[in-house]
Amino acid sequence: MTALAAWRDGAGRVYRAPALLVGVWALTLLVCLPLTIALRGMLEPHLGRSLAADAAASGVNSDWMQEFSDQATGLGVTFKPSVIGFGAVLDNLSAFLDNTTRPAVIVGAASAYVVLWIFVAGGLIDRYARDRATRSHGFFAASGVFFFRFLQLAVVQWIVYALLFGVLHPWLFDRVYPRVIHEVSVERTAFVARALLYVAFGALVAGGTVVFDYAKVRAVVEDRRSMLSAIAGALRFIARNLAAAVLLFLTNFAAFLVVVGLYAAVAPGAGGAGLSMWMAFAIGQLYVIARLWVKLTCWASQTALFQSRLAHAGYVARRQPVWPDSPAAEAIL
Image (cartoon, rainbow, N blue to C red):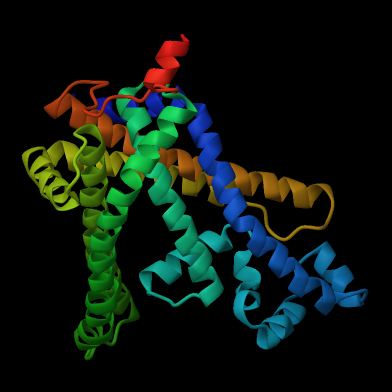
């Protein structure tokens, strides 16, 4: 199977299991909802019934936003013009590239979201690997089995990303970059040098992500218990199928860029209350769903590629649980 065929197969597996996409979207919404309610509680008393409130309801009041941001703490400091429309995407990209620290409450919510993804990852990959209905009991059984294994894998991931963002990133951009542009007088040259460092750093992060993704796939398909062996197996698989793995990653990344590009074209700006506000919310949620579709397609296509090279479609070493799976249930039947 070629990389493009694996991507099409993966997209088909996601299409045939729409409930999983709806489920992870609902999970994302539930994690964000408490933050939304908390931020609303900060904004409402600060605005009250005032002219600033009327201006904020009809568009962007930059002066008021700046005033609120200056006196806000915690979650409130994130409320600024960059959260509107496509500005939020650019703000997140900038924070990623520059390794910007986020408020503790955002880090806490993001950490909880990551733990939830670690829990559902086993069920998601298991469903895409089998490419047939596993029902809720099969999904949660797989999620429970691989949750603690993936927690061990997450420890290794944390160490790797801590080295990348805590050691390599400062070295590249705080030490190497100033030396490179020390005698540069053309702004364009300095920009190109920084862009090349971003590309190099991003390639290392992407490489690590791909390795850990295939480690998850091998752990689920082959029912591996040791995550170190799963990582070693992922490295071997990528080395033996380098061209296909790289092309598949680029295909998934291109799908991500298409989604971001479409959102950039239709993302709403500052609007008023009422219908325009709900339209902006709907467009934003469609973008979230599209981003989640790309993530799920990435896992499903990587699973399809792995199975096509080392096993066969639908093969999973672990027996699918049947509920209720017990001698008592068989006696009743």
